[in-house]
Length: 209
Image (tube, rainbow, N blue to C red; front, side):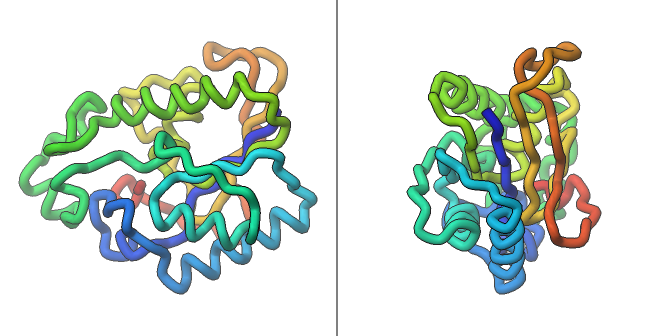
């Protein structure tokens, strides 16, 4: 099995530097352009998935429809970004003024929302189900939080270092069945991270969502 993990294109919440935004958040024009460019690149490289998965968030679903128009996308809410509860539409700056130590532990929960440990557990559950399937080539359009959770699990990196990975918008990270190595998932290896045709844009933890 080979799994292509795509982070959505640039969204309204990203531009506004919100904590996460909500599932209603959609792409801006630049995000749509990013998705179209990445889709052409993937299709041109001969990537033909037999399983199409997408988060229920608007910015992910819009990205998916631009990557592979008309594909049989299956929505899996477990691939959604962290539910930040009442903090979702706050700017990160104002959130940190109220909760300055929030990101010191992955066990801290957003007010009326999830912790990053909660995110990790639902992503791990989705991964376990996927591994039981007969899919050979999987394309999953999701968010930076779930991507970091999954890669950390694969590579044996504890959640105390979340987010250890910050993929660029409209980039793809690739996992492939391979030779066991290290202390992570013994049957998968990382073949590529934050890859794609678009210029690399350094991103900070403040823009992780």
